[in-house]
Length: 220
Ligand code: SAH
Ligand code: DHB
Ligand code: MG
Image (cartoon, rainbow, N blue to C red; front, side):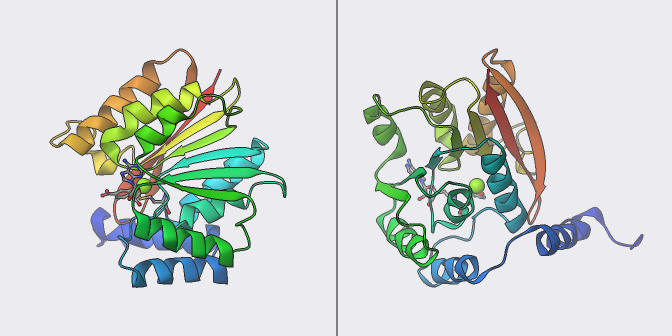
């Protein structure tokens, strides 16, 4: 163990956490394998991150959840499992292939009755939303360049006490001195949430192939 480099340890620690603190039932496994078969990129949350999302949504008693970036619906399944039977989750996805895979995965998981997969560019779809009741919980996980804009909409669509989460907010440290547009936008997002008096925010480091992070903001 002491011979091992930190780089080698990260995926082993991730596997350790995911085995013990992640869900691996049939619906989630099939969601992953069907997403892979359909050619979707394998950038979904980890099993332990999925557990954390569900736990936080559960703890806050979320009845209305907004997700920005669906992919094959893997994180959507975790989140929707926190909902009561009459709860509602709206997830936004620009890729029609991904949206179709997600709808099938949600159907198989028995969650279609409470989840709407809405196809389109998230910015456009969010701009159209103005008389919806507030969301209790928002998960931002689409294109990273959009994060600052998604935050603005998430705040607009929240109420005091709502949670706003964002995935990929540490990027193995690339947010510290950003060298590309993606890292630059996330770095700006982190600056925005940390400086915003309307929010109380923590950044939770997460493990996948490398170290990443999840910001959790509570609307005051
Ligand atoms: N939340 C998913 C992973 C999402 S990956 C999970 O953890 O299981 C990011 C997704 O955002 C991709 O499916 C991508 O097609 C979608 N996306 C990228 N840009 C978008 C945009 N402008 N509007 C809506 N969705 C977008
Ligand atoms: C990427 C996007 C994600 O949402 C993620 O969780 C990991 C990687 C990416 O675009 O590289
Ligand atoms: Mg992500």
